[in-house]
Image (cartoon, rainbow, N blue to C red; front, side, top):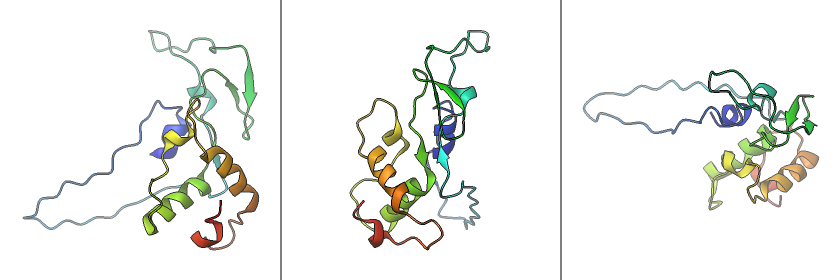
Length: 144
C-alpha cells in the first residue's frame, strides 16, 4: 500500500494494518505481499500527476515545467507530491525498525515534496553503497 500511495501520487492511500479478532474463534492468516525489486526507484506515475476536471477528465498539466525521472516519465513539477523512493531503502528501514528500536518508523510522508526529511539524502547515500545481491545486514549500514 505504501508504494501504491507514491505511484498514485497520493490518490490511493495505504490501508491501516489493524486486525480485529474474536477471542471465541480461531483465526488463520495467510498474508501475501507483492513487492518491487529492492533496487527499484518508485515514483509517481505520469498519469497521476495531473489534476482532474469536475467531469473526471484530466486538465492540462498544472505548470509548464517538466522533469524526467529515472523511468523517463515526464512529470509536472508542481503536481509531484512525492520524491522518488528506493524500495530497498524503505524496506531496509522498516526491517531495521522491526528488529531494533530506531525510535521512529519510516513512512511515505518522509518522501512528500515540501516536507523536511533527512531520508532523501540518506537514500542517495544508501543507493551508492548497498549491494542488493548480498543478504541485508542492519549493522553494516547503520551508519547511513
